[in-house]
Length: 220
Length: 220
DNA sequence: GTCTATATATTGATAGAC
DNA sequence: GTCTATCAATATATAGAC
Image 1: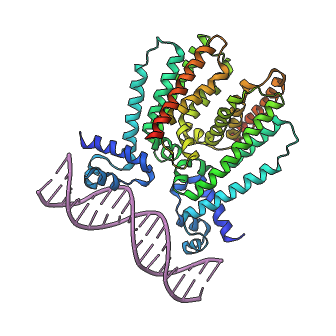
Image 2 (image 1 turned 180 degrees about the vertical axis):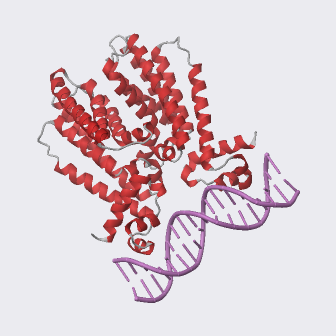
Image 3 (image 1 turned 90 degrees about the horizontal axis):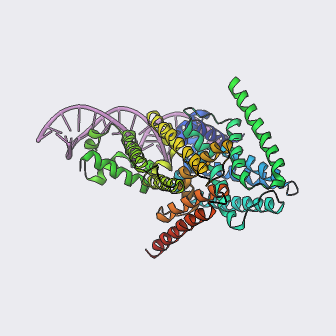
């Protein structure tokens, strides 16, 4: 693996484990057994590393979105989508734990983040419309924007919320499924009678996944 | 005013404006025209200042809660409550912009935060029960915890979300009313037919407040 | 591409006089 | 309570040899 890529991977790992603020360029270099000078050969500074990490995140997100087929059931579609989002947020959680601060320090990163945001909002919004058209959700036109916004806030800050709730937050699969179940909770009041059975079946499926993941974690 | 209190006020102001991370003890001292030595006479370090700020926040919150009378209409009650929460979050927004990081650095602060959290969750939960008992909201027992959690996430991270959305986030009254309107959006699907008129009237009231605040801000 | 060595700046914090 | 002076530690970043 190229050194540049090694630096990115090590940085993600260290940032997630110990917090971006507590990790210096020297820590990253030491962790990899390379010199600080070498690190600075590949990156101008720490912000540059963070920008590179975000670029990976954005590529990852976009490529996974494109792999989502439009042909399937809109409920499965939004669930798969949310699953991807939670997975990625978890993989780059240092970034989301610190979102306003990291963005305000780095205008070009903020610009890129805003672009991706706009894409995501469009996607979520169109998925809700699909769910409405398929008579799965009963959403009024004027409720659409608020619901989209609430879905965004819940996914974006779910892990941050968990970290404030527990003394030693373990970000495992169980935590991500719990987040997905909050998405179910948000959508639940809008579900039509027609689709209720299908919806509750899907919810129970994730409830079981959450419980399994939680048990695995307990025994580990 | 005592120097200790001056330090706290100046710190809140500087932290909110420029971010806690970018403000050092020297900045605070310089801003007040006192020496760093003097600052360190009053506080052991920066964390100590942040803890003191949070103590003020907690006192503020608790005293304002106690002033809420239990006798009034439960809908007004939860709205007043949410208003207090948004006001306080705004006043200490540097803290909420950075919640996971600041808490992880300071275990005793985290402990205190968790205690306050538990109180708030109890309060919100009991308010939802009141709304259910008054036949204003139609919430099932098993939906209560999820809805409480979603209300917490939305209030806690509303300003953080706004800061990630706009290039130059101005945290004004309009922003807080927009947050309150998201609370309406969360509760709306649960409102009973009986209470719908009262609910929409209240929502329109805040919609107007938001628009007025937004106009004032535009002309300023 | 990588290392060693080092420069520069900043930070958090203290000692001791007034 | 407050100031001046100052320190030690840490962080970012670069120069120049290999």
